[in-house]
Image (cartoon, rainbow, N blue to C red; front, side, top):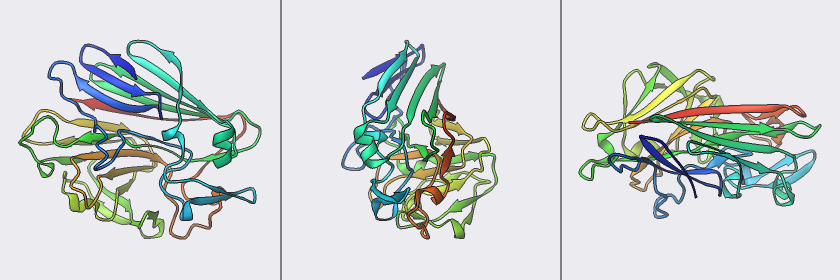
Length: 291
């Protein structure tokens, strides 16, 4: 486990999946991150690559060949190599190898970085295409936060999600695990969204952000503690497992989507897919402020 720390926070990152595993307040000992209780969900904050969400029949077609890949891709289950580290920063790298090419034939270099600055953790991802051919991929993040935060007498329903800018967002419905991009529906977020488990009876609430900088904040009027995630991404998922009464919620920046209900299985035409030219880079980032 890799440890980062400063005056305010202590952070742990697991080289397995380059996964953010713990963020603790140094003064109070408060743990902000979900601690991967397998009774609910056995992960903390997986990296989603080279797909986001699920493929129809867990397979796709590229250059005429069919490949198998399970939900969210393989990066979350691969061990990354530390390429740069100090007390407040770490960068980890995953490169294509024989095992990844059995699932995904393209060359890639995925670099995940975390930087601790005061009460904020900055996340960045760099996807490099070292080959001449186009790299076709999606990318996402999936950090989970304890709800409640530190107060054993509080309840999930005491918390709310505030989205800024406050407006009516378009929400991408999920039909089973698949995106229904043709039937987006409005979601009024001019007021805070009160948390309840029934919000997730059809899986995640998927907001269309259109790459506009957006902040989602988890808080309760009964406590000074919370988290705020700021990102400019195409989409953001808000998720907690249903029907489990799970004591956490995830804020998920997505540069991609699960297969559309009308998907053909062709990766090249997959909804919200990225096409990265040879020897080019794709960058993504978000920041979490812990208070």
